[in-house]
Length: 260
Ligand SMILES: [Mg+2]
Image: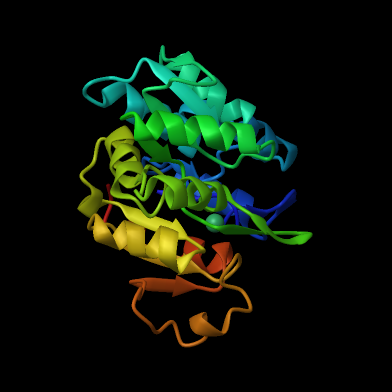
């Protein structure tokens, strides 16, 4: 299970060793993950293709698709969703056969919503107060971008939560839901998987919580963060690598020793 942003690329830039890593990864089942609710699996495939890497679309699990699957399997299954989020998230929820509405919803789904408005907050609060499910793609209050820190899905979740005095169900990492869906796509129980990520809270703590082995790469959000310097702290990964070349060398050696 491989996180993408900060592991395979940063923004539009492929990280060193991407092609060698993906060539090796193909020897075992793998799934690529993202907590970014503004992209579709097709967007991720296209981005990797721009970097010269070919990955089949079913090998990508976005948090928007995971959220849609979560809603489709919820009982009772919601029928009217108010989505505060991107076109990708709206498309995923609609693709699960759930009607998109602007009010009187039976589920309020919150992702990164760059068009967030007071009017939407009013209707979200009304729906949840009337009994709608409250679901979030992630709880990250801020995102690190090339332009600095910007509010994330968690900022809108917090605005709604302050009004309804309730916390949402979170589908994205570090929630178990995302990892369990990823592992089930691989046909493996989580303890037989390795989670590779650059974020201690979402990738490493979340992966460890479902029993996966965890590998931290220091090429993404962890780069330059003092907390990661000694790899200490509450979310200790099983393995730590400077980047993809070191991870690739480790996997090549250990897979040679233990064939699939
Ligand atoms: Mg990442």
